Image (cartoon, rainbow, N blue to C red; front, side, top):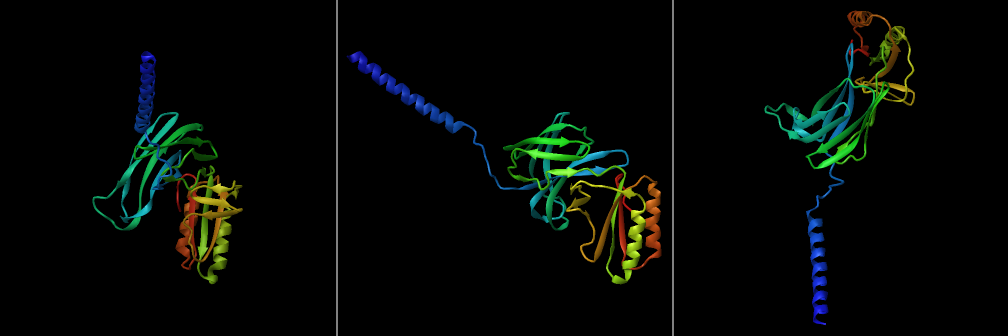
Length: 263
């Protein structure tokens, strides 16, 4: 009987020890932080050059800083299948440029092959957002399983069509309406009409069957255009220069090309 009592107390002690050990192990497990405050915007951008296209990732703080030239420290690692971006902290400038603006930085990713890349976005080495970057001839898409600490305003950036030329004609005074209309006709006549898929292209947007060019004046009358242009860009440069040299009214224009030129 004495042996049975001893065995019973031994089993009770063993269970109690095991339970405490489990609790201790649970306490020591890493804590997964979720729903942390949003701190940064992450945007995709396509850089246009005469012979290539480069993807760029722009990071911007949600909050304004007390200088125009705050930056964001980051680490970037890449392979042919995976990208790791670590957003570390906001860096104050050595010499403050007076003004109020978000902290920002730009990461040049490069001219990417059309395929799927694994993507990690890490904040402060503690929060890991896993996802994928999809690249093809039509668009870039950043699909993250979580967006802890970050906001991706536009998950998909459509790519600017090859050989496209776009821009706007704007005027402030009704007296210049006819001049602006003739100029717009001249610009549209430089190439063939171009069909666009709905979406945002960075330099312009095509939404609800309407073309909106970034940087166009917010006031006055603005007309946008886009064409498929197969000619010499020198012709566009001369057209813009001749107009500006011979007209002094309120009409303004801007011409952009898929090779990165601006006239």
